Length: 249
Image (cartoon, rainbow, N blue to C red; front, side):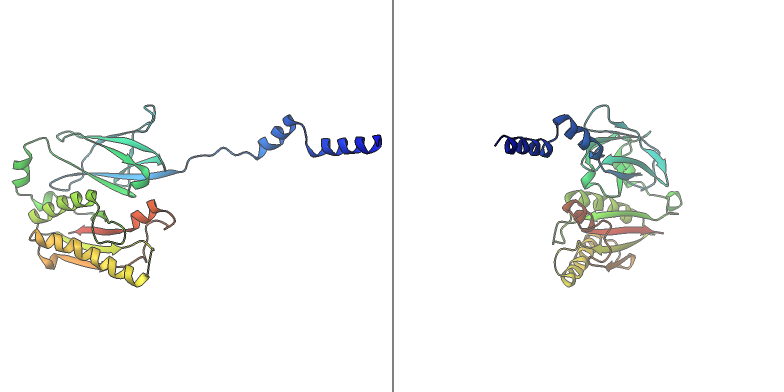
C-alpha cells in the first residue's frame, strides 16, 4: 500500500509543474497585441471653387496626449489611426473658417475630403463668377458618396457633399462628371448590379434637378465586382456601398 501511494504522489507531481515554472514556460509564447492602424488621407478644398487649400491639421485621439499632425505628401495630408480609435480633427487655414469634427477610423473612407468656407461674406463669394483658369483641374477631383445597405439612398454625410459638388458644377459649366456605382457582396450578384445602376441614377437625378446638363454626366455600374475593401465586416462593406464621382476638365 505504501509503495502504491508513493507512486501515485510522484505521478501527480509530474503532471502539475510548479506555478513559477508554468509562468516561465508560458511567457516566451505570449505576444504583445499591437493595434492595427489604418492610413488616412485627407484633402482640404475651397467649398466654392474646389481649389486645394494649404492648411494646418491636428488630430487629437481619445487621450489628450495622442496628438497627430498629418504630413503632406502625394497631394494629401496623411496620418494613421488605430482601427478602433476615435478623435477630433481640426483644420486651420488663412482666410477660412476653422473646421472641427469628430472622426472614427472605422467609418473613414481611404481619402476624406473636407470643404472649408471662406471667412469673407459667404453669400458674395458664392455668387461671384469663378474663372475656370484659376481652378486646379490639372488633376481630376475625385470623391465617394456612401449609401445605405441594399438601398439607393445616400448617407446624410454624402448628401451634404453632393450639395457642395452640385453648386460647384452649376457655377462652372466646363467640367464633366463621371459616376461609377458599386455595392457590397451581400445578396444576388445580378440584383447588386441593378442596385449599383440605381445608385448612379439617384446621383444623376439629383444633378439634373440642379439644372446640370445631362450631356455632362456619364454613369457606369459594376455591382460588387470592384470592392475597395474586403467584404469581411460591416465597416468594410459600408465602404463598398458607394458611387465614385470624378470631375474632369
